[in-house]
Amino acid sequence: MPQHTTLSSPSRRGLLSAAALGGMGLLAGRARADTFDFHVPGGPSTRPMTTTYPEKGRMIVQRTRPPWLETPFDVFDTGVFTPNDQHFVSWHWATFPTHVDTGSFALKVHGLVERPQALSLRELIYDLPRFEIAAVSQCAGNSRLYAQPRVAGAQWANGSMSNALYAGVRLKDVLDRAGVKGGATHVQFGGLDEPMLPDAPKFVKALDIDHARDGEVMLAFAMNGQQLPMLNGFPLKLIVPGWSAVYWIKMLDDIEVTDHPDPSVWTTRSYRVPDTPNHTVEPGQKGFGMVPITRNLPRSFVTNLKPGDSVPVGAPQPVRGIAFGGDRGVAAVDLSLDGGRTWQPTTLGRDEGTYSFRQWQATISLPARGAHTVMARCTNADRVVQPMRRVWNPGGYMSNQVETLDLVAA
Amino acid sequence: MSRSLRTALLAGLLAGSAPALAAAPLELRPTPEVDLPFGDDIGFPAGPGSDVIASNCTACHSADHTLNQPALSREEWHAVVDKMITAYKAPITPEDARVIVDYLARVKGEP
Image 1: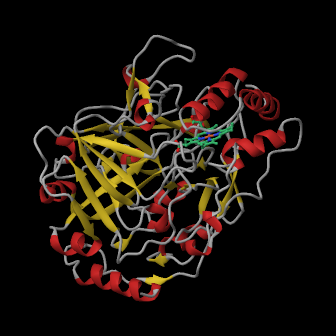
Image 2: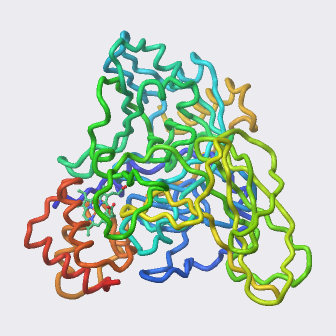
Image 3: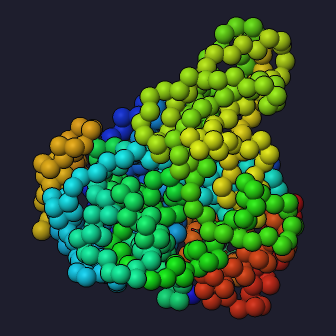
């Protein structure tokens, strides 16, 4: 079998960097060990920590090549915007370049268009209106590690999600410049990563034409005020606010307007979920339909306390966390201390936009010594509520049940 | 054009034309040159079939990808290997596929 040598060739050296190591100081003391233990039964539960990936700070290595780097969960307590150097990383094929010539880079727009385009970065930056949006990027398989029973796939804990303020141009403006022809129904996106073996399928995803032109789907050349880290898709990334990160094509260089849905295995065979409520089935269950993964669902997490933490009995205890509403904004985050029988509201933090993380906080008091649980539940602006029942499907996708945090009052 | 010149050019492009950016203007600094790790230092534990899995299952992803998987049943391992062949076009013979499933069921353990 051919062994690719691209990754160690000298041409892959030399990275531009915008990495600010700013947020790192807060974490350095805590995560100094070289391994991280998720304490999950049923398979290997430790992973190496790394600081050696270009433009990346301390990350959890879920896979070396192509990189799957998970954001350590402590990062989410430091603010709603994930620092670029700790934004999670996920690639499908290892052939993406680590150096892009910004002078000759061209974004091709072709297919069912009046005027096919080859847009330079300069044209994208100068000639089109600037657009900004905050959005959570979440892998469809975020939290797969916690599936019961366990399933194959990237064994992400809760850190294959990150939030950023993106700057760039609207996809709509790029499509208008090319002039979409009548009869167009879909837009397909590809990046600079090519399959490892000649017959293997190129990684592409598609959106339907109305979604592509909704004025929110965008092409980002900056995140959090910096150019994108190479591993997060430099120089250009498709941002599909509210939708699963599988659609957020990195190193985007190819936009094709078509008259058919995405035929690739990445939509017809993988990245699919049962069409049942909460995409949930019983292990071994048969006879349900499968649909492509699309939008994100509401989720919420406690970020200032860890499982097993001890808190003083009867004393006011601040509880704080993050939530996102999926494809709608966060309407409410509620807490339950009695296993979901009763819920109390939390105070929401500053609204950074529909698709952003939103911070929330509350003060609780645990009345008696011993074990307690805290549940956090997000309701989005469409009144979609996180389910109490565990989400399970064969691919380990779209997990979003209410999280339960075990605490001890002492 | 040299790398640093291109860096400076893009820095200029982004910083000069970014009044709408909420965050501070871009300041690009070259990083030390770094290679991405290949993961060839991570091997499959030695035993019957380890050479077969090593030669069939590391072209597209490093071995830690497979080793980090949970314990799965033989049927599930069979489905994984079949997906590699049919969806992602891994060139694996049926004999090798059988050896790999045996290896994984033994080394990874069944649930």
